[in-house]
View 1 (spheres, rainbow, N blue to C red):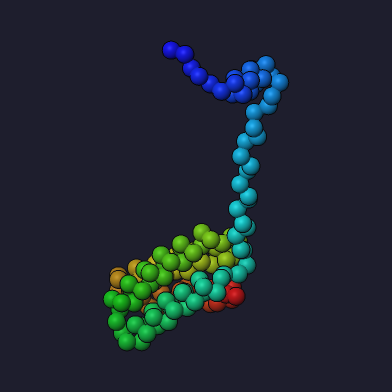
View 2 (view 1 turned 180 degrees about the horizontal axis):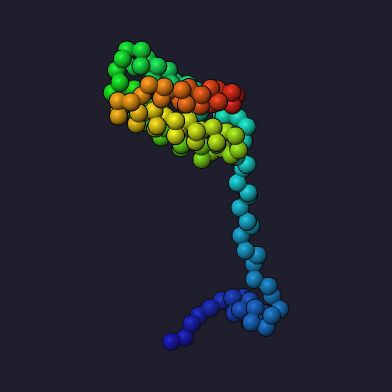
Length: 132
């Protein structure tokens, strides 16, 4: 079987094999990932967390412990997810809020929650200090 390659393709192949031509440059490297903010939390994330904490407070005021636990679990999940978008103090504060919300929900479910909300309130305040 005979291959019919264009003459210029054969010439390029011959030059490449002879070391006279260089192959094309590889694709350029992708730009570096943007730096994660360390000392502030975005307005969007703050609004989401503020709304969640407000909903938590409304359920707590109404005495609906089941919905308080559901809301605390949501705050824990959301703040842990948000923490991956930050570094430094912001990431640490969000991880702290996640842990505090989860611990508070566990304490409510166990029935031994006297004073368990103090850590949650402290971490919520730390988040407010970092909001833009």
